[in-house]
View 1 (cartoon, rainbow, N blue to C red):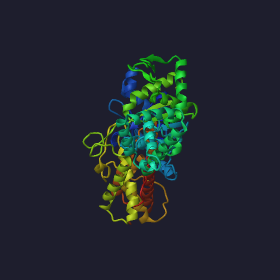
View 2 (view 1 turned 180 degrees about the horizontal axis):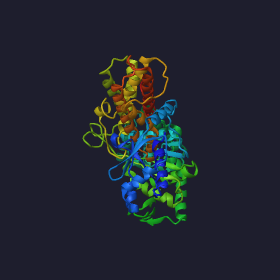
View 3 (view 1 turned 90 degrees about the vertical axis):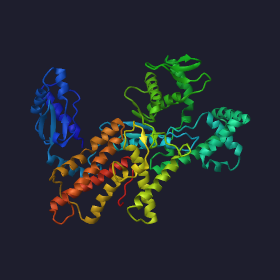
View 4 (view 1 turned 60 degrees about the vertical axis):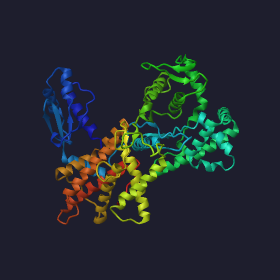
Length: 565
């Protein structure tokens, strides 16, 4: 149910009826219950534009609101705020309908689009580390969200699998000879060993450079070694993706190397369109407002990330038919993407009806505010961090309940991984993220464990009840009313999160919903013998719909739920 859309239409029609020229009418949730459920605060802006008194404009709008089944009453407050109170029976009817729908009343986009979500993008030369965590988690949740709302989603893992370093790595792999695959178990150590040889042995360094040329020239032996290395490296990534419960597969990989054949064509096309200039021997594109140009081809003939990114945009628009391309990449790349997007527009690779967006995110920091590292200052491998999350989850949950070893493993996996993902998604992605084990595994505050316990508590109610849920919702008090309204706001929240690529809108909503349910649960008995049957059924519907909403939203975020905890 799109509550805001319906209210916007009511206010828009009222403005037209009152001959007030209002555009893009937007209502917002009221800040406090005494201000109603929603507010329209546009009268002040309209008054300024039209040179009229804001209360007079608000009064004209209120008087022109058509008779409807949504609003109970409308009030004017202060200098011209319009407070909107929704009818309890309208909320009850909406909740009854949502409760019987597997999508909880959430519709699909009227005009779905083909969306490419570019995320994770590890470097095949090394094992995945904490620097890949945020892109992977945020990107996967957005891909899930877009797909749920009806878009055709194409997940793309733009892995780094090409360049000078791979000449060094395959040269070292060949040098190790038969059985070298075993040394790839720890890619980080393999890379360090190869780099040491490169730095200390001039002959090996020259051989590595030769291998780069051979690789780029399609040498069969070099390609075989390179493919073997990439295969092993992807295996490490798949282990991480499986542990994280994200949906990236090998079919989603669209590596840097896949665009190699297009790079010369990009240069020629940009030259033909008069966009390229020469600067210090390099071929570049100058964009308005930027002091430094976007380098397309280096003076030695080599290509850069910008060239590959332009080739990727052209491919995604022309071949895949994408209408929205979301790059989930850290904020430090903002300038790069701004220039790439500008050049893609100038070159005609992305027409104006294609949305190009950099879904940026902040850095992952430790509790002291420094970049997240191991104790000795090294890079934290992502698989190690996830295994630690599961181990810490075991400690957190065994403090409360006794489980069998099998139960403990299953529960700790869901709790630990869910805690890592939810903790990241619970903050505005544009902010730097403080990684704190104690906070993420806490039962208090906006955490995954808090949501898990809320869901498990509701499931325990139904295990005790063991009866059929019948009847309809009857809103009897303010807590029931607020809970019903919060449940019906799900679609508005999901659409806003998708529109702005902000997963934390969903986690904020979940926290508010779980907190509201806990208050409802404490004050509105459900199974107590003295509760009238029609009221019990109404409260059971509210409880069950809350559980379904928690589960649905958490699944969109890529987080599993537990029936018992």
